[in-house]
Length: 487
Ligand SMILES: *Cc1c(COP(=O)(O)O)cnc(C)c1O
Image 1: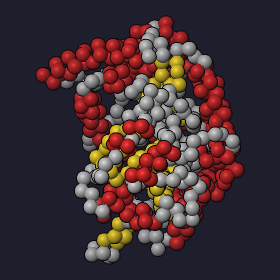
Image 2: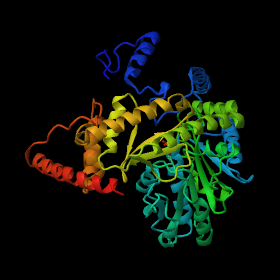
Image 3: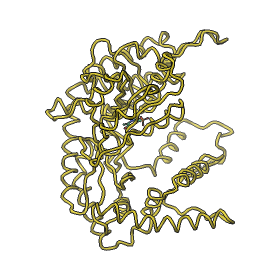
Image 4: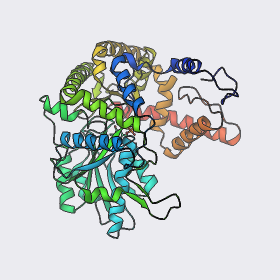
């Protein structure tokens, strides 16, 4: 959205009230997360709680955690947050860690730490084992830190196939990853089996509980039976857990903890010769946002065990309703074995294209994410969704019926685009296309990216090649979708 003011940096500054009013108009087209319409990205409770977080954030918004000896308050928040997380994850008193700006920073740090630990013992070409369902942050870490990935495939139930793990470990393996749960399907990886292998082979095991860290422990306290995945499992050497997801903190707060200081040491950065002074940093960022630490600490203090248990109870009530409701639709199936709070579903009827179902849901005002390999729709369920889950299921039943009656919907709208992107055998082309779109969006004065809009046709041989490729892709998509849905 463009400002009505012609200069991006106004010649003359504007009154604060005017600026604030403008701020709200910018947000007018954002997803309606306050009424449960969005099934990803946001963890929202209500206005009162949002105000409480804003106040906590505001009180420390200028404070800087860069130098942990300067703002003693921030170091104290951090110490107490890490102690709380360690307790939640059944850590021993040796468990230590840092507060980071988000899950991605926590994941990046784990890879850096284990790479440097392996370097210290002479490993020159670091490698790591990631299940196919590992969060993208881990692939980003692989690129950033030059650690080669060995992919652990999934079994027929979409669970990381632990039988194949030993064969992927070698002398260069710096770490193994498991997730609790993995983001795409909400399945908890077999962490105990991973742990046994990690111990036997002497390789660190990180558990990515970015999304699960602040809910699984409370689901268990509420009486759910879950496989073990935290510090109770021998072999688990570190865990990431985001406070800005199910911890309901303002954005910008996650944690990474390690079983003991021998691991965490390798995360630290020190530069003793810098003209700006001797410099040391425990995490990735330089300036670390004090507001986010204060808000995260405030969230944990406000909820405590009782509050998080209550949120987990409501969330899982919504999750159970959702799962049962989807399973009751004969054309759909729930993917893998989700323990909650996330789940994914696909179509088991060749005449029901799941992306077309997604388009129908969008048209009814829901925002649902698309998955691939296999094709599906995704739902990250929060306590707030308890109010709307039955409306969602009613609309889902209608959406399926509409698509069944109009199978041609699979060939139009975003269903066609997503079908193309997920089934195109030339993955390099998909990558290039998305890169191009992002470049467009970030070029000077860049505009919105619209996946649903058809791209401006390229001219010349590029255009012809693209048209040909897309034609081939359409044929391929249809064939692949038929195959996928016949399973
Ligand atoms: C959200 C998530 C991340 C990344 O966290 P951000 O806060 O989005 O950077 C990593 N792993 C898993 C499993 C996640 O769900």
